[in-house]
Amino acid sequence: MFNLVIFGPPGAGKGTQSEKIIEKYQLAHISTGDMFRMHISNDTELGQKVKQILADGLLVPDSVTIEMLEDEVSRNPDAKGFIFDGFPRTVPQAEALDAFLKGKGYKIDLVLQLDVNQEVITERIAERQKISGRADDDASKLIKRIDEYFSKTIHVLPYYQNQDKVVKINGIGKINDIFENISNAIDTSMA
Ligand code: AMP
Image 1 (cartoon, rainbow, N blue to C red):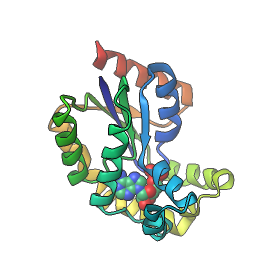
Image 2 (cartoon, rainbow, N blue to C red):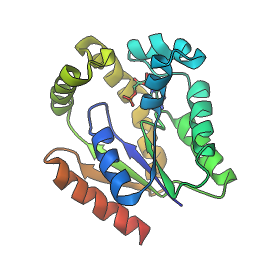
Image 3 (cartoon, rainbow, N blue to C red):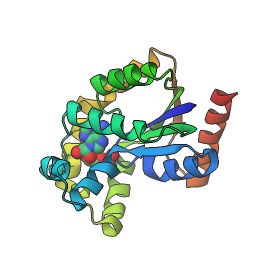
Image 4 (tube, protein in one colour):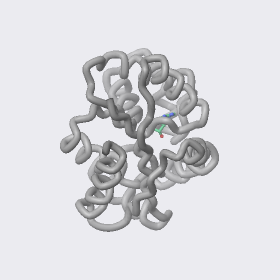
């Protein structure tokens, strides 16, 4: 079992790099953002509960997010490992994930921090919105999401740094070059 967290602000390239990691390492991908969007488009009870929160660019409450995440992990008992994309986004989420994995005899093995500056984030998200049409990629909502990142999510980094699990990856450049650095970090951690 190899468990990886891919960490970075909105627009850092977490989704793009996750796809490449899954293909190469056959890990199960868990993106809480994708899961919430799926609930919203299927108009489930959970979807109705979180729809406005996502539209406003705010974080969904920890209790709701953690429960959804744990259900998803439990639904994949045969996975070789997981890549957590967009989770944890708060320190209580990180603590809950550690406790949950520990209960199953697992742990987080590696945290990849995708390092990008604000200028690049803004450019990439403006591009993405043309294709994805994601309402929360709208400039005014993006400001809220970046606020949430710097007020709440950034604290997840020292949490994992204290456990000596973080490898920082330059997230600016060609997708394949970034992926090569990611692969090297994963291979070193797996060795
Ligand atoms: P993402 O696709 O990861 O950018 O997530 C889109 C939106 O889903 C976020 O702006 C939040 O509203 C919600 N979301 C995703 N993951 C989490 C999480 N771990 N904790 C709280 N809210 C989340």
